Structures are given as structure tokens and as C-alpha cells.
Image (cartoon, rainbow, N blue to C red; front, top):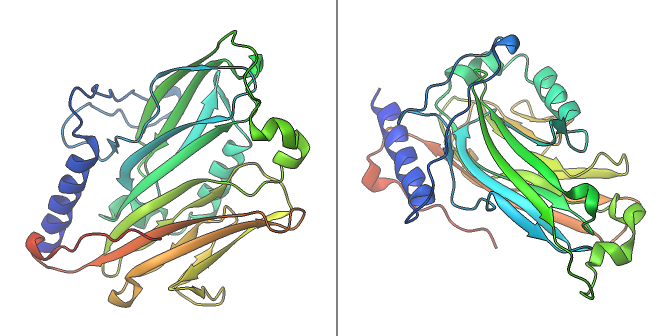
Length: 288
């Protein structure tokens, strides 16, 4: 009980740092359509999901052939899935990823629903060489393991500016860009009590079969045969029964066999929690 209180206190502290911007708008929680039999979510202080400060403005103006991205971060329970939509359609096979995640996590899903483990998630949506078809309404859905749904909406408009230098992806061409290894969703930090499971996401933009990921812990490749580590088809790393020795930086590296030399990587700091006081809670280091 003491450990749970400590985690909640630490979580509230991290949330306050991320969302306490002067004049920041209040983000409402949208109830999921009852046809999907999801739980109704009330907009209340005890919400399990907190929106972070690194979120794109809700209204964006792009010039033709501009490279940009939509991004957002949330503090949420481990096992939470983020999905981008444009005009009600999931983008870049993300619904396939959602299904793969659900199928891969059928065993620990119930454990995630009871877990107090938390992750600081970041998600981006790449808009390459912007054109008219990129205009529209975008939505980021945040679905927790117990099927609570939170959303944030964005609108993208294209200006009539001309004569600007095209973005790099315009010069590369869509065929090459489709094979670039780019990680669009990951966790910056993760906290879990000893003995709980933790899911560390590493999602690649696009579904090109030539792209792959590798996980490292303290610069050593995570053994695929290890009984407590499981790399899922989505690229996520499932850490079972977190222990004190799991503390440290996990790195996910993405690469493409068709484009040697092009790589992407992210770092996730994992902090296993014991029954310690909040004063002893150490700062989470930045990975270089």
C-alpha cells in the first residue's frame, strides 16, 4: 500500500511538471461510442491519462512541399495504445499494429489492468512533402488497457505559399521515404513496482518488411531467449516481473536492409520502484 502511494505521488509530480504550462488549455476526455462496449470515462482529476506539454497546436498551417509532423505526449498506464487517424481512418496500418498488440498481450493484459506501472509516451505523425491530400482533421486516440478512450484533435490546412524550398522528403521521393526507418512511438521513461510487467513501445513509421528493430539494455543486445524479455511483432519490448537490476536505459534501434546507413533510435529509462519515500525518488537521467 505504501509503495502504491509513493508511485502515485511520483506520478502526480511528473504530471505536474509536464502539464503545468501557463494558460494551457484544458483537454477534455471524450467518451467512447457505446457501440464498442467501452467504459464511460468521466473528466475528473483522478484521470489515468495526462496530456504532456509537447503537443502540436490544434490548428496547423503548412506550406506546399513542407516536411513536418504532428506530435503529442501522454502519461499513461503501461500497455496503453496510441493510434493516429485522419478523417476517421487509421493511418499507416496503425490499426493492424493495434490488433497485433492486442493479440500479443492477451496473456498479460489482465495484469496491465491491475498494474500501477506508468509510462511517459511520445507519439509523432510524419507529414512528408505536404500536399492537398494532407489537409484535414486528425485525431490521436489514447486507449488504456482497461479500454478507456481519450482523444485529442488537430486540423491541418495548406497555405498557398509558393517559391519555398521543398522539404528533404520531396527530393528523396516517396519510394525511398517509405523505407526510411523512423520510430514514431516510444516511451521516454517508465516506472514499475517490483514484480510488475512493463511494456516499452518502439513503433516504426510505415510497415515496410525490410525494416526491423533491435533492443539493447546498457548497450548490450537483449537476448530474445531470455524468459523475462519478449520482443513483440510490433517492435515493443515486454519486460516481465520487473526487478531492481532492470533499472537503466533501454535503447531501441531501427534500421532498413534496403537503405544501409539509415537508422533511428530512441532511449527509455526504466525505474523499478520499491517502498521508498518521495524524497529518495531520483531524477530520471537524459540519454545522450
